[in-house]
Amino acid sequence: MSSVCVHGLGYIGLPTAAMFANYGHDVVGFDVDEELVDELNSGEIRIDEPGLRAFVTQALESGKLVIDDEIPPSKYHIICVPTPLDRETKRVDLSYVSRSAEAIAPELRTGDTVILESTVPPGTTVGTVQPILERSGLDAGEDVALVHCPETVLPGNIITELRENDRIIGGVNGVSTEAAVRLYESFVESEIRTMVDATTAEFVKLIQNTYRDTNIALANEIAKLAADYGVDSREAIRLANTHPRVDIHQPGPGVGGHCLPIDPWFLGHESDALDLIAHAREVNDGMASYIVDRLEDELGTVSERKVAILGVAYKGNVGDTRMSPGLNLGDELQERAVGESPLETRADGDEPIHLSFHDPHVTDQSLALEPFDEAVADADALVVSTDHKEYETLDPAAVEQKMAGDLVVDTKSILDEAAWNATDLELIRL
Ligand code: SAJ
Figure 1: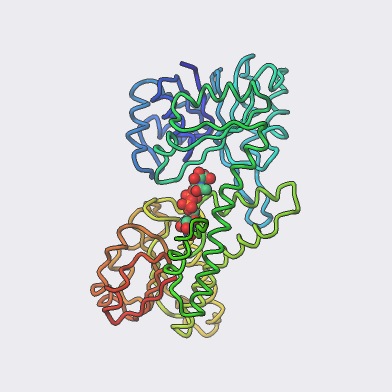
Figure 2: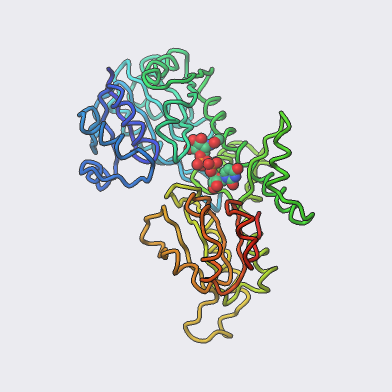
């Protein structure tokens, strides 16, 4: 079995390293973060992902996975580092990718393969990574193989999807592609789809997430239209989707996570053609504002009210809060309340709004989450912003007793409508 070095031990790199190790490869998981390396070596795993702890432990205990802060010579180098987006300029930061390539170049030997898994703008493999690697004196495509092989796994189901999702691989030439296919064949159970070049592979990955984001924007706009017409958006979408060629996604409080809100912007990296896609992003980012409008319609003002936000994870049944719609909603409420209640009219120490947050999956101590009973106590309004399974079975009568007001906004439509409507609470569903 080949030796593999996985660069970057985050949400994708860590499970990928463990996967190769558990399929018999000798793997070094490399990260520049020494604290993370120490944590992993002492068996601590920061990432809340079902099954990941046992999967990584198995790899470490077998001796096939070693975590290190040095890069060994390896037959395969796999880059899984972040590619963050500047939220103001919408420009991607490729410095982690460049630094990885710079660190790999001195270790490269003829016959090695470099695989970029990080999500990147089209053209990055050949435009950014290739020239850096070639500083080693070796030619990509001739002496070493170079490919883009994007990850496509869904947080919450990463280990299963790593094995079961189709994989796309685009090399700088055919020989490169074949070298990567041989590696991924060792654990991928479904199709490995090869393409003519790395840029196409980069583009395909981006349009997959863009399709989903744009489709959700359509669903969000449908939800707003449905509200104006007195139509139940979920029921309308369910019925529309019975058509064999219709697949409308679900509305919600906005699109979170580190993929859908970011990747569409990568398509605008070297192109001015981004139009509908950029607008869809704005529709999704505008959902927090729309929900606050709905709260204001009911409450008159959100200023000096208590609003309980249930769910700060970016989606159901995970603990990841990156680009969290629930937290965005909190910011939007705060801004609106400050705008409505100028500082000079408030007594010292009065907050413009009382926000409380609850989430059974999030462990981040910095977020000041409250136990459920405290979060909901005396709330004027309650907003369900994440579809955690725990919220599906909330007891409406118990919640009604704890709240001061009667407004419940279910942005994910997970509450039992009949049960909640049987109380005096006013249930609004998106
Ligand atoms: N959401 C909606 N309505 C929907 C579906 C999702 O509002 O109908 C929201 C979610 O609540 C969440 C956000 O969208 O806030 C994103 O969640 P998600 O489950 O759609 O996707 P991610 O970001 O967890 O993972 C996506 C996946 N991409 C696709 O399904 C095309 C995953 O397969 C990718 O590997 C991942 O991005 C990635 O790393 O790129």
